[in-house]
Length: 326
Length: 290
Image 1 (tube, rainbow over the protein chains, first blue to last red):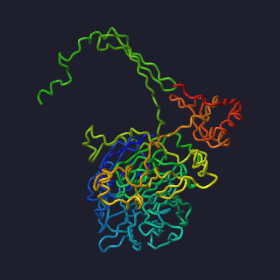
Image 2 (image 1 turned 30 degrees about the horizontal axis):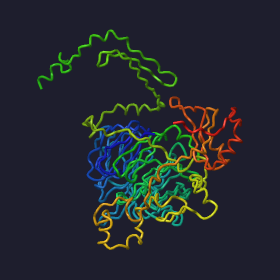
Image 3 (image 1 turned 90 degrees about the horizontal axis):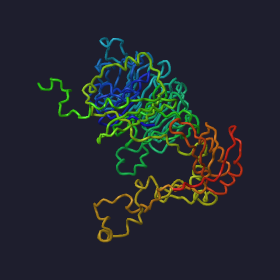
Image 4 (image 1 turned 90 degrees about the vertical axis):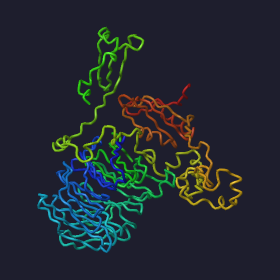
């Protein structure tokens, strides 16, 4: 396959997200402007100007009309996807690390980093249908986990919130009361910071990637460990194919060590694993730095990766990918 | 600025070509195809610089992309106006490029092989070591059977081996080796601890144990051929010739074995063997004459 290279960002990529129809791709980077691209040919549709710091994360509503972005400038912004205009700004006392719309787009979960004397927290905000009625107040604030919370996502039926972060523990919270329901097992769980977490298309299971050089597949309801995929490099990003039983892990050595070592030692590949057999299928090379973000198109026929090198690489699979046998 | 408005597209008489009026003498442009393979031929006639009539045939392949199903909303979004920085994007900025490099999903080993075999069958030497002690031990990272020291991906990560570093004093070093002086750049391949390699990366293809298989059915793939030949011994390469235009098999392929005896046994056994309703023809591949 010949990937499409998109060079719209001047700094390392942080996050990638497809909309539900899979025709738009949103990219966030450490430069201050999230960008939207057409997911078929990689043409740039527009940029969202207004943030004043690195943008760590984003999510798009089911109807592809609203975009929510979380940034290190201590704000979370709502945007009109089509026009690129700001609809609302939530202010926090610390950088926002992850955002996700709930099913139905009426709620959003936002995590904030520990900063100054503030501890990290998970906020639940109500998202008004009309942006003029949007309010700042949180429906729920959960505190407790130590260190950064790198990712928080909604569980089935919005009943739970799944969070993971620097303390390497995955927690399931009640989204109504904020009570801690489950915690991942210390023995079977990750040993180092969890960098990424992604849900399966049907939400029944999710995949977490960690700096302990492994990714683990968990059951969403019971939080039981299903599979472990081990690799040779810290995992920065994970993605799951909605079409085939494949998982993709992206990572690589620390960006600070890149120039001092052989390029082969870097392992800046997107590694494909068989979800069930846990066996490596192959690697897709191309980035000059660690992969920070991965996303699968909802149709399962293409995927994109964002690297520390500032490039987004959009890969449309060759026909023979779909009948790979182990 | 005022001049620009007066029909900038009109050519001045000095730029007009003299033989423009002769074009009517040429036969009309002809287009053939696209045929079932998507091959389209365009035949044009033109006068070249010397005034001679030349026929130019352009052959192109039209590839039909699988038609993506788009929702109505997605089609609507396709026509959205650009916004933000994308509005005043100049044409030359080339933010989006198609990679010039063909990127493949690189398989860690040949399809259909077990992880242990993959290491062994890759190299004749590694094959030998299978019985006794492991021959291939990396001195840098200590990994057994994975790679040679010179190919160690970790060689620059590892601390330099002490025995190489401690020996000479600073004065001696600069006198002995000009490249090793303080502050001077030493390429990684010349550094202490790095193995001097002479073209070890060159892939040696074992043409001797190559077996040609003909009369294959159209839907035989490399994996099928591998499956068929694997029982006879370690296979290093399987290749099925594909038609570049149609992407279908051309009905022949090559299989390379590590050992000649295995190849001979495969020939003895599989020549005349019925495979997919066709009688296979298996023989030694004759090396190319050039």
